[in-house]
Image (cartoon, rainbow, N blue to C red; front, side, top):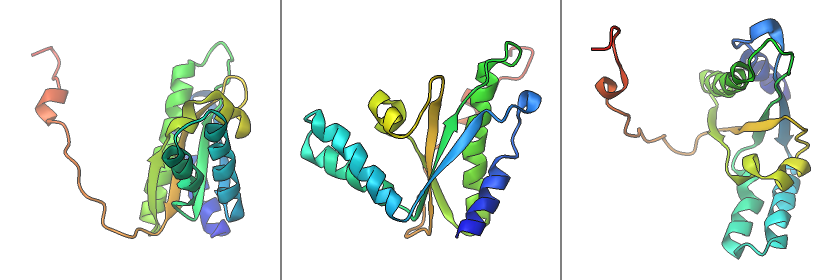
Length: 164
């Protein structure tokens, strides 16, 4: 799957990107590295005295799919390009990666969970100053049909200007 994954990542990078700063990067976990990072993340929770079920779930979390892509938002503070736009670009990369995976016959899910917001996990995963984890994109083959979930009422979310 390495060549296919490179194609998916190339497609994912085709997002709005004000001033072409590419304010995101990928970290790919595949093969044995998935188990290693899961064990290391579980070690953080174990050291904190977290409950065994949470530690065990974390240890297996990276094994949910054959490939996990961590998308890292790394905005460039150039004084001209709003950081918010750059963070949105990283979110668009995550979504494009999901769309590309699904269009190519794979299944994908975008998760964040606690490691995306934890300083110790970030340090373990190589997250630098000013960077944030936009998400973990799990890519593999679906084992079941994804159930449709309830969506908000369109009329409650749409306003037509002028403010009627």
